[in-house]
Image 1 (cartoon, rainbow, N blue to C red):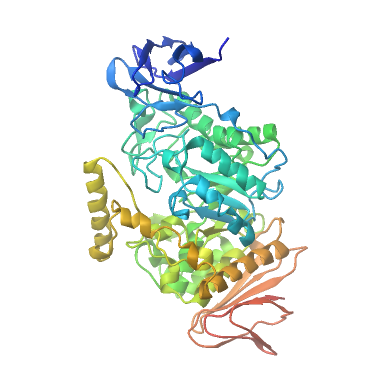
Image 2: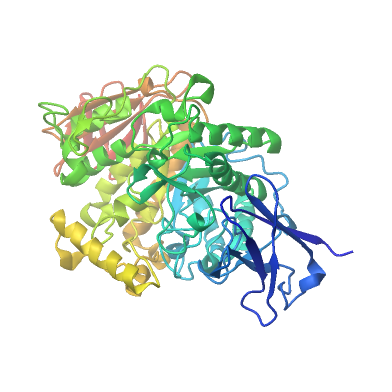
Length: 614
């Protein structure tokens, strides 16, 4: 008896649904599906009934598509595991349990301690290597091990139109972009990461789908006009039939964690998940992930990208919170960026200090507030948003590791006209200062790919849309957007030009050269210091105190937690040597350009940084 194959699809308003097997082959099979309950349709057949070359591939996988109410062309499965023919083509059924895992002894990220306080590394599969595949990325994992990374965070890998893109216009929550290698390549990547002690995080986009290849509305009420987002109608989380949509999204998340052994999910722009339900979607997702973690016996973490500046996002669901493990802290990035570069356009303006945010204060005072209190906008006025924003944090009680800190991210680099990295406008010493404040902060640090050696490549926004109208709209729209913010339109790279992607590929050949090697050694040393000074212990914002001098341009960040070695990060952001009055210094743990200890404090060269016991 051959193995039966069952395929189901939710189409609650359809009068008929047909399945088409092998739709691109020469022996297509078209059969009616049977309605069951709650809007579901079912088809069941024997694998030998359509066989290799008829409906199945030589490895037993099945290509199929659906025809809803007789309307052609046939549509891909909303729950497709693989789109080998692109986002408009048929889906391919695979068995995720067929993979032979070698990670039976894997206890989870950081030997079961989870992500909090560990070091995260964000990478984009399509530019991490010239090949731009998951299998090619495996060959670079040893570099991350040597750096001391704990968790590798992959930018979205859901299918999107064309070969190259960032992935935030994906259209399949259950699938892996075919150019990256498809779902089996992801399993190989996770298994290889675990073999090296690396956890794996997927960046998933639940708040919208891309404009091309999105056929969900042909099947059911996946979206609602009850709420609106920057991408149009919101995902249906609280309108009629929302229970099925919530289950659809949550099932996709659990699938990555269960069937692909992924350790964490980064949730894109959760503030755009519009939901007025008594129990918010994120809380429901958090509880489902916690239950799965108990089942599989290892920590499973959720990282939120949230613009709300409210730690209710990371508070337990039992206390009315959303239950996320951690959330990105853009305020720290902005404060660091302004302090180091002096840029004050757009949303950076508030971080230069002054009214109405911090009257009579400069950018270093803003940085002090964010390092000590987590957010700049914690209930006060946000000029960029034109409203009061955020909520204050209880410094004594809050675990600072629940905030993710970073000097660079894909957004903050890629959403510049030329995709230029912060190193393009900073000295090596200034880059070292930024890295030290991030990696030795009490927060959970994250490094963006190539940052650790000051990669010379940009990371520009790029796409490869196949629809000419969409390609033209993206190219022209990006030029117009940057021009409206004062950028020279001629500096805006065309996202549809293949050269934009090619230029963004990491130049691995420079890793061991000169200043690149020096910066890389500094990053690796900081990660080692972090493990030694902080380890896996809980940290509090109250354990941090910061002193600054706006005119002399120095910053001292002290971290003194109970049971830990107290230390200070001393930074000279000025362009000349500085005497920094740091008392009670013990010994030098690290210095980038040398440091001299004297009776009245510390002498640092211009753009110098040192780590000292206190």
